[in-house]
Length: 329
Ligand code: MLT
Picture 1: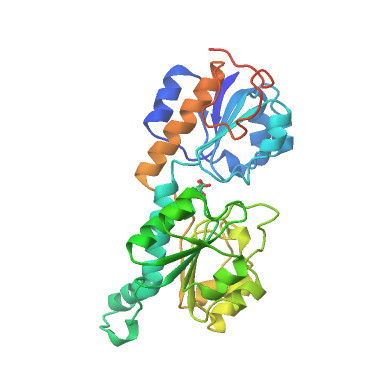
Picture 2: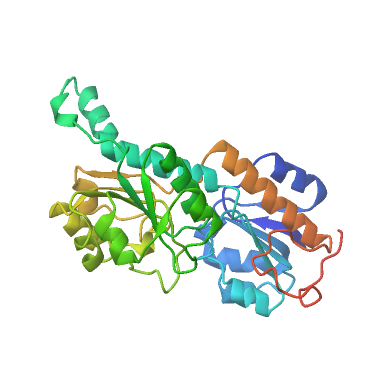
C-alpha cells in the first residue's frame, strides 16, 4: 500500500515532512504514462497532482483505496471532482496560495506589452539601439477589463488600480455591490461592453464548458482597436486562430499568453507574430507560491489520511461521513 503518490514535479520542505510521516512515492513524470499511472493508483490512499495528470473517472475508479486527491494549484479542469465526490474521495486544492503570483505576472505582461520590453531586449542584444522603434504607452489612465473577477482577478485589479488604471469587470457570478469590486472601484459590465471599452483585457477564467472558446473571432474583433490582451488563466478560453487573425488585423494590439489551448503547444503562426509574448504556464511558478501551494496540499492530504476533514476541500458541503475514511498509518 502507498500512502501518497505524487505524479508531477512537486517538491519542498512540506513534501519532505510528508515523506517522514507516510509512505510517499514521488514520480514527477508519471503523468506522461497513463497505463503505468493507472497501475500505480490501484494501491494508493492519497494522490497529489498538479495540472497535467488527468484524474478522470476511470483513474479514480482504478483506485479503490483512494481517500484524497490533492491538487497543487487552483484549476480543476484535470480533476473530475464531481466523480470523486460521488465515490467519496475528498478533493483538496489550493485556490488562494498562488493568486498573488498570478496577479503579479499579469501586471508584468501588461507592462511588457505596453512597453515592448521583450522585443526591445531582443533587439538590443543584436547590437541595435532603436529607441524610436519602441515608443510604448503608459498604463496610467487606461481602462483595464478584468474577465473573471475572482481572487486572482481582484488582486490583479488592485495592482492595476495602483498604477492609476480604471477597472471594469465582467463576472456573471458577482453583483455590483460585491465588496472586492467596490474596493478597487470596479464597474461591473457585460462582456461585450468590457471588450469595447477596455484598453487592456486580462483574462482570469476557469476552464469549463461555459468558458470554452469564449474569446472567439467575434469577441476579438469587437475589442477596442489596438487593445492589449493578457491570458494567465486557461488556454481553452481562447480560440487561438481567431486571436491570430485579430492580431494580424491590428484590432488586438498585442497579446501575452501564459496558457495555451494545448500544452505544450505546437509551433504555429502565433509564434511568428512580433506583438505577442509567450510563456510556458509559469504564472504560479514563484518560490513563494510553490512553497505555499505545496504546504497547503500536503497538509490536507495528511489530514485526510489521518481521518480528519480537509481544510481546502473543493466541496465544502460534502457531508462528513460520506467520504471514505482514513486512518493513521
Ligand atoms: C493553477 O491551476 O493553479 C495554475 O495554473 C498552476 C498549475 O496548474 O500548476
